[in-house]
Every structure is written in C-alpha cells, then in structure tokens.
Length: 356
Figure 1 (cartoon, one colour):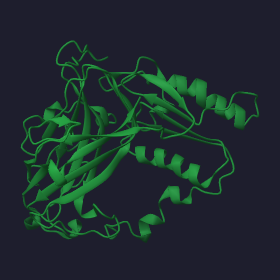
Figure 2: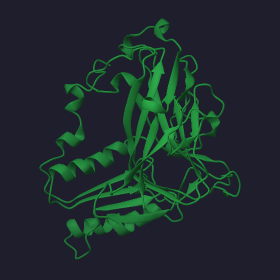
Figure 3: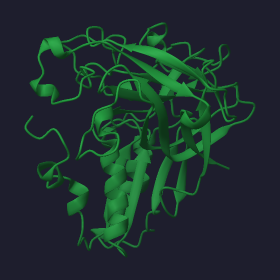
Figure 4: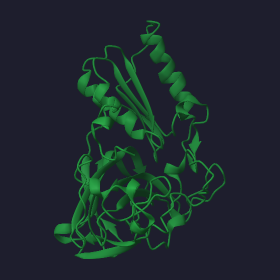
C-alpha cells in the first residue's frame, strides 16, 4: 500500500529487468487465458530476445489458463472446444523433446522459435519470431453503437460509474468464491442492459478475420470525476443461430466470448510513475495495449467492443477522485458520468493487428 506507483520498489522486483546474461536454452510457456500472468510469459520471452541474443529461446502460447499446460485437460476451456488435446500435444511434442535435446543431448529436432495456438481456427502455428508481422486496422466506436473501419460522425455515449454498484467481472460472483480459472474467456452477455456498460457491435463478417499481436485501445473520453478506471474488452460474438453447442451442452447462439480485456486506471494514462488527475469535462485521451492474441473471428461472427468502469472485485473500486485510494474515506467514493467520444479529432477506436 505504501507503493501505489511504479517506483523503485516495483522496478527492483520486475523479472524481465533481471532476465539477462542467460546462456542456456529457454522455453517460456504461457496461456492465452492465464488470469494470473499472461503478460509475464509474453514479455519474459520478448526481453530475452532483446538481451540474450543467440541463445535458443522458444515461446509457446496455448489456449490455456495458468499452469494448465502441465495437466491433461487441454481439449476445451469454459464453453470453447479446441478440437484436440492441446496439453498432451505440448508435453509429448514440445516439452519432452526440449528436455531430451538440451538436458540429455539427444539428437532431436530443435523447437521452433515460437509455437502459438490460434483460437477460433484451432490450429498450431510455428513462427520464426513473435509477434509476427501484421497490419493495423482501426475499428471506430460510433455514437450509434456500431463498430466499423470507416470514420463515424461526431457523437458521444455516456455510462454511469457508480462505486456503490460496481460492474461485476462475472455473473455468478459470490464473495466467498475464488475467481474461476477460465473467467477470461467466459460469455459476457450477463452485462447486457447495465447502465455502466457500453457496447459497440461490428457487422456480420462475410469472411474470416485473423488477428495476431497486441490490440491497442485508443479512447477519448470526458468524465465528471478526476480519476476513474477504463476497462476495454474485445469480444468474439457468435452467430445468433446455428452456432452449435459447447462441450458442456451450452448453446453458443449469440455467445459473447471475451477474447482480450484489460483495465487502465486513468491517473496512470501517461505514466505509471507519475499519476495525474483528469480535468472534469475536458476531452482526455487514454491509450494502452491489451495483451497479445492470435485469433480468427470466423465468417458469420461479429467483432464486439465493450467498455465499463469497474471489474469488481478483480480490481478494487475507483472512487472517481484523484488521490491515494488506500487513504480515502467512504465519503470520497462518488458516482461519475464517463462520456466516450466518437468521430472527428477525438475519435475513439480499437486497433486490431490483422493478418492475411
């Protein structure tokens, strides 16, 4: 609680900063839906590429939760099927040969630089680097609730950020329960109709849309408060009919699968080291990266973006007031109106790393 900014205390404990002068082979394994530390696997690999040049450095990203690659249940997650047992494949075809080659000096083939599972298409890819080359495509957030690549007219939409009624991260959350391992991929339709959640929906895709790499949220807003949280989610919405059923027998018609999501505490929008308040009523830009992904939005699906002010209780409530939250009293927690701007010089958008 004494270190609420990215100060020397946290910098000294940042693992990628210490991951240098490594001279052995490295295998970094992560899960696309790791609620504990997806960022860690991706950035440990990237930092090793930068500082430990010349060593065998392999990244594996599978459709897993935290540590799921060590088990034997990798054929599905939540309501999504992967079409094969991904954990057994990793253990038998990647992990064991890696140890045989580098620990037992066996004559087995070297692993690829990056072995990455593409969700949606449900296939593994071998790449010579990660992230791979992509083309950024900006999807604009329209005041008419549309998500499109063309520029929308100037407009705005407003949500109510009320710390007395914070947006839940899960529909079945109970105070005594731990967060389920698979919550980062769950259906988001439980938030439909809440006054603190705004949704933008893209057109029905007439062909597959592949993305690979980091997604950028570039949001312009106004607030009646001096701080606040901005949760941005990119969702794969399934067709309204004919989408089939999950491995658990759940209908996937209209399903809203959360693909990527992240939160920015707005006082840190320009720097995690030096927070600064929002000026009430003034257009403010909040731009940040979501974690990498490799995904296919299938033909017939839609790309959906949701914005909300809370992710309770995964992230502590923001009082919508600038300052040290851990020192604030109950009376400091007040509702605020957050207005998302569209079009013109303050156009809000989400930038997708599209692939051929």
